[in-house]
Image (cartoon, rainbow, N blue to C red; front, side):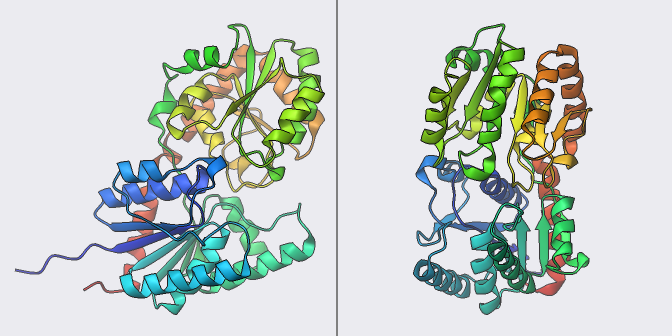
Amino acid sequence: MAPATKPVRVLHIITVFSLGGATENTLLSAEGLLKRGYDVQILTGMNIESEGSLFERARRNNVPVKVFPLLRRSIHPVYDVVALMQIFFFLVKERFDIVHTHSSKAGFLGRLAAAAAGVPVVIHTIHGLPFHDYQNKWLSYLYVLIEKIGARFSHKIVAVTDTIIEKSLTVRLGRREKFVAIRSGFEMEEFLTTPAGANDVRKNLGLQPNDLVVGKIARFSRLKGYNYLMDAIPRVVERVPSAKFVFVGSGELESHYRRMVSDRKLDTHVIFSGLVAQQDIPSLIGALDVVVHTSLLEGLARVLPQALAAGKPVVSFDIDGAHEVVHHAETGYLVRPEDVGGLVEAIVTLLTDEDKRKTFGERGRNFVMDAWSVETMVNGLDHLYQEMRQVFHPN
């Protein structure tokens, strides 16, 4: 009788375990792969307290998580070297077949450690490129160099959008055959029908039945573009007095935007919901009429396909992979980045046309239903891992 084949051992490495698209992608991937017979673990730094945590979900779903507290988002010459050595010794001890890294810091340190430890297959997912047009050019050059070094230690690079692949090729991160696109899936079922809790969410937020509600779901940080929406709000309210704006999230600039709302006397039109638990996002999106996304840097914000799955039209800055999910004038509107006037017109158009909101939402739901499911994402990873099995031979 032939001995049973040992399961393929996979380690996912990510910088922090806070709420967010990259972390949710990583955890959902691990959960799906465990169900398919892989031996999967996650290695991470701590979560950032103001950004929530996915540790409880990982425990609930029996996903093993190893925490190295010195693995942090910010650059620190001492902590980073120590974290690199910790990861290296952990990989030497555990002998994984595949190391799959996520996010810039963990992506760089994890790939270096995996190469040094002789891990047979090293894969990296780019959720969003760290270099962009809104940073110092020398810093941008540095990030490109770091990504090029990391790419040399990667057998495959997964991108969550085709646009990321094209931008990576433009700066010569690697040959095209090294890249593969696998969209970042999410648990879609609860978005496909209006959740029962949507009306309760509106009541809890103090919204009236005739209010037209625009929501933005993002961390309060500079590149999330809240300032552009803040500039647009008075102009929208002037034309649509019943418009209300719900800001969902937390972060380092939250107090700054709260003061701005107060100073501009927008308190009656802007509601801060605070950080919302992952399981409550479907009900929250169900309570909105329009979802807006004004980030200047995002591989592909999960809120875009989530909103469309919930049948909600989207207004988004036309950055990175937004056009791959938002079809202009069909499922929402794409606006030139930083164009406050264009943002105002798109929001007003949707708020004043209920039929258009419904039509756009229905088209969007039909479009995202399969491509952004967790099952499709895990299928892609499973296929990639099996393809790479020729590189190693588990005992």
